[in-house]
Length: 111
Image (cartoon, rainbow, N blue to C red; front, side, top):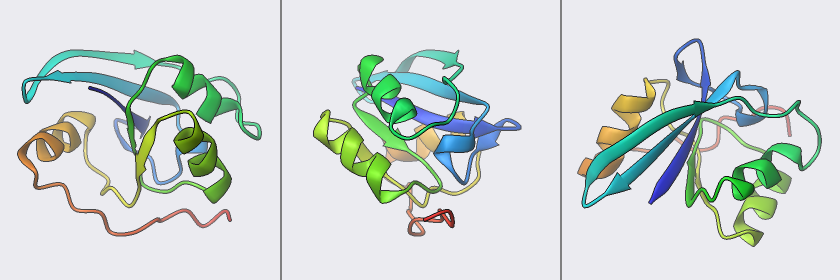
């Protein structure tokens, strides 16, 4: 499984479309097997969701995201979980693997 996490200043972004980079983490057998960072294209309608899908991401964990972006990602087979707390990518991934990641609801205030 490949997960994407939008990052600003080293922690989870509260709005995925305004993140500086994305942490892309690959998980196999409940373990992190690889981590990399990718710089997204400039924010514009539909661009970042399509870019993430092109990276073959299975899951997006984010603080907040608009409904149009969720629809695009879902239509491309990418699951979205929003309301993720502002933690480091490693902390979020570990909580996801351990089943202790708690969503606080979509925190996007742009839509």
